[in-house]
Length: 135
View 1 (tube, rainbow, N blue to C red):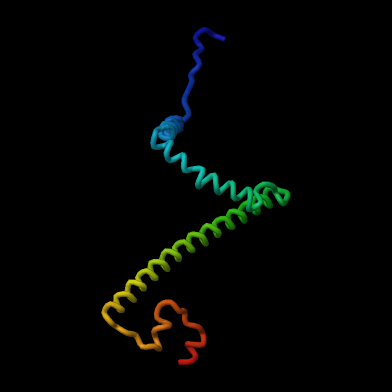
View 2 (spheres, rainbow, N blue to C red):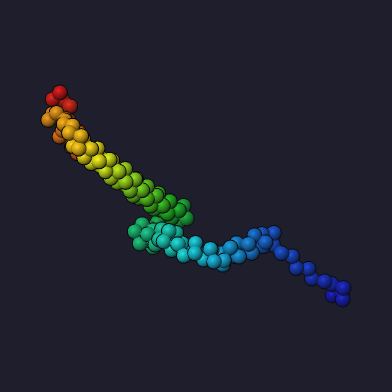
């Protein structure tokens, strides 16, 4: 080996971005955001392990295990969509009932009366199949 041999160390092309990410993660606001990770991301993995069979592979082979993981993920997504839809429906129904109660009180204050035929089915009663055929 010659004396003029110099070893050159080069940085990876993404090293600058890695350092920026670490600086953001270790900042005060980054630490606050990272605290919420356990409530969202980690909870999803825990549910997959506990409730959707990710603890053990039921089949042999990479393709079959991937299929099991994808089905479990699809199941988790459907459950999440159903819970979000339920929450949205509850909010819209509660706001509708609040508005209906307010409207009913204002009618009572103004002395307006509804005909007996319509009073029971106006707000709180869902019409049945028989009510449509009886008309």
